[in-house]
Image (cartoon, rainbow, N blue to C red; front, side):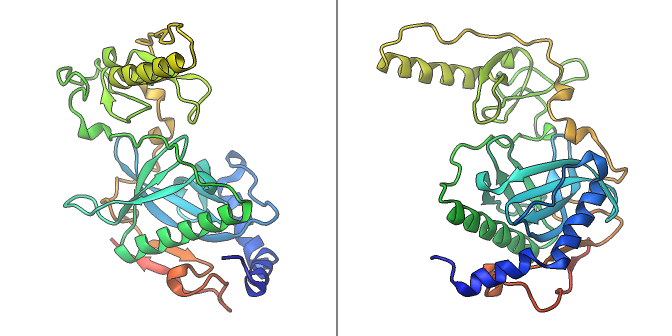
Length: 303
């Protein structure tokens, strides 16, 4: 459905709002010189809050900022004052997928993108629904405005290290301080060095060859061979690349930074303070997408 005059007026008011300009400036200041400039014409800060991100080694609190065109998150150094390790995700390539609750993990969903996919968890079911509604609304509006189609090729979600005591490919190799864990960039499984000593170019993730497990390597090789046969090309396309010397500690450097807090219970915010989420515009679940006449009170959830 095309935007009407009322929608255009609402968007115009948001874009020219002093409050919106001030909020974006504050986010820039909190990231400091380590972050990118965020004040772009047409950008609206829709909401912000703390979510628990499932990182490679353990769940960790991360500060998230949702704009009408990008999703930003970073490590919490000093709550509401200083963040680092800024990550920016274009919303055009984002796809969300709700996760079922279980005994350990609640109120979660997957954030899928071309280069990286991960799980996040909110403090409450209501907060989860609000985050997902706002993100989906922003994605839909952005794609409608640009006329583009949503991304269909997304990176695999990495299996956390704690869920794999042994290689998920050979089922034999036990992980130790010496025998380190690696992640296949195609399927996200945790594998040992010998079972992931091949590389393959995954264009949606990188222009350089990336580590893949032997199963994915064989599947990719067969698919490429089939494509070549259809095209009349009989060259050997596999050209395996060994990478036994690769240091897995560099595979996800973002997760090696710590803010000094103990890991939160998954489905909640940082352990020492309330997890506060605030949205500055209404989502489809609120009955509209216009800014309220005054800032709404923050939605609070405490562990």
